[in-house]
Amino acid sequence: MATHSPLSGMLAEEAGFEALWASGFEFSALMGLPDISLVSMTQHLDMLRAIAGRVGIPLVADLDTGFGNALNVRHAVVEYERAGAAAVVIEDKQFPKVSSLTPDGRQELVRTEEFQGKVEAARDARRRVETVIIARTEALIAGLGIPEALTRAAAYAEAGADAVLVHSKSKDPAEIEAFIGAWDGRVPLVLVPTAYPEMNVERMGATGKVGLAIWGNHAIRACVAAMRAAFAQVRRDGGILAVEPKIATVDEVFSLQGVDEVKALERRYLR
Ligand code: SPV
Ligand code: MG
Image 1 (cartoon, helix red, strand yellow):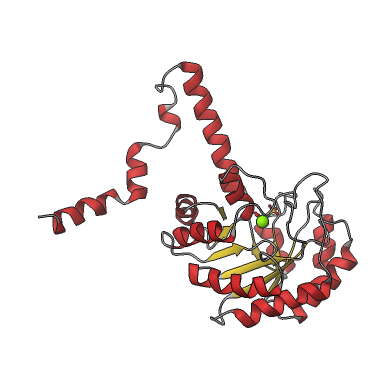
Image 2 (spheres, helix red, strand yellow):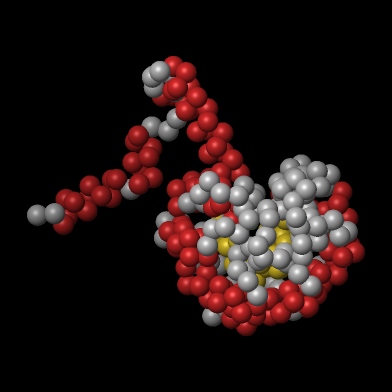
């Protein structure tokens, strides 16, 4: 499940998700900004570190294009590992990128060889062999077609990617299904089915080739919808009475904040 904050990560963990997607889109939206490489690596790292401090499940970090060329990727991978990432995703778009889901967005890819260098740099840079390097191809997003997406995916696996994320914004899952059907399965695939939501875990599992499903932006979208509804009601009513049963109780928030533990610690240490 996507996350943009420790709180959203904690709620996803509580709901039973096995890993978190430290999404660039979600973090940009949280900052009130478009997802076009405006938030800095440091800002994202600080948030990732804060999330890692409050959850026990693995974090898959969205590094966008890797903040520059292969040398920037080398540096970024080490920093993200140190901040608590279990996996990093780098995408083959040019920096600065534009969100993949942007209607008519400018989607320009780097050369395949250049991106292979970034994947190799990521693989060589990692300090822990368990850190998963996920190479993401935007060939379908850029409208380059399934053959180009397959060629790039294979080239990235050859360069050492542990998995390949293939992104599509086609509303019809046929595009991604055709890609999966033609993929030789040398490394697992990662999907982000935001645009084709009928693709569920069961359908992905049945292909035998998908290793990870990312629900890409559902934390921030849930927040937007919930806050909009609550704020509008308070404004309309000129009071908070009617909204009260529709929002979390203060006790629920206290519980997420660990207030019980605070009380116990106060009893123990404050003299
Ligand atoms: C993100 O969540 O930041 C992603 C997925 O990269 S998408 O926004 O669909 O490109
Ligand atoms: Mg992203």
